[in-house]
Structures are given as C-alpha cells and as structure tokens.
Image (tube, rainbow, N blue to C red; front, side, top):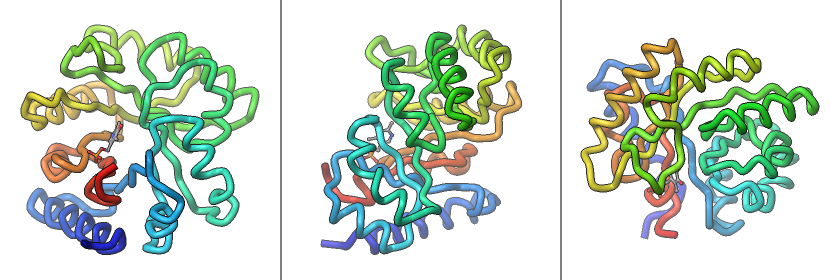
Length: 219
Ligand SMILES: *Cc1c(COP(=O)(O)O)cnc(C)c1O
C-alpha cells in the first residue's frame, strides 16, 4: 500500500505531466486535497507531506478537522466544495478561504451580508450544474449570467466556476463547457477534475483539481 506522501508525489507528477503536454505552468494548477471522511492521522500525514490546500464538503465536519490545525498551520487554505445552507453561512465564512459552491441568489445575499459583518471578504466560485441533473447542486446554464450579475450587484467576489460532471458522461465535455463559460464571463478560476479525471481537466484549463480517493485512499 502506498502512503499518502507517495500518493501526493504521484498526483503532482501527473499534474506536471499534463501541464507539460498542454503547455501550462504547473504553478497555475492547484491540488485541493479532499479530506472529507478522513481521520486525523490521515490528515496529519498530508500536512506532514507539505500539503496545505484542502477541500471539505460539510461545514461541521470541516470545523472538526480544521479548527485547531488552522492555528498550527497559518498557511493552510480551505475550500468549501459541498452545498452550503444559509444557516451555515456564519460558520462557513469564519472557517473557509474560498466558497466554491455559490449557486443561488439567496446564498449570494447571505454570504455578502455575513462577509461584511465579519470583515472577511472571501473569493467565491459559482457551481454550475453542467449536466442539468435534478439531484445535483449548482446553477443551471440559463441562470448563470443573472446569478453572476446579482453577485456583482451585492459585491460578492466571484473569481471562478466549479462543476461536478454527471457520472455517466465523458467529463471532458463538461470541463470544456465550464472553460467556455469562464472565458465568456471573464473568470480566472476553474475548479474541475476529481480522482478519476483530473488529468483530463488540466488541458481544458483547470486551475484547481479536487482529489480525495487517489490521495487518501478509499473513504
Ligand atoms: C468528494 C468530492 C471530491 C473528491 O472525489 P474523489 O473522487 O474522491 O477524488 C471532489 N469534489 C467534490 C465536490 C466532492 O464532494
């Protein structure tokens, strides 16, 4: 069995290879280690290996994982990559550095208000439901322009887009679509690609890949 440090090294090699063949700078592709459902020992191993950027999909679990580690690792960065309920916005703004899952006007309102209150102006991404799946979070393609305009109006800083492609479709189609949307709206960041497909997301412009299983092992 390989260790988490070895997994991280291996993933970084894949990222570098994909960058080399698509003429991208590896410094522009950030590895988000998805630590949901991992225990403290596994998380510590990733920290010991030098990993400092992590993704969590639930606010409460993230608090449990990271509230103390935050103090020990001042250079830690945390991304919220799961759906956010408005009643968790206070805690989310206090803990995270980037909210990747903005997907509706009510959440824009709640985040803008809470960031002003806490004086923490976090960059956010909009999650796009590129596959128009009923069960999946994310704004629909038709609503994206108005949601982005609404965020500008409320002074919520949106720097990128995020997507989770449908499991039964080629992910590259969705990555290419997300890239097109980001270019159209002048957004710099693209969070796309998970354990099974992050290599494919890099030539299509990913600036953040979210990797859990390939890094920590099966959950
Ligand atoms: C769990 C999760 C990941 C990581 O998935 P793996 O297949 O384990 O790499 C990435 N993005 C989101 C939004 C997730 O919830």
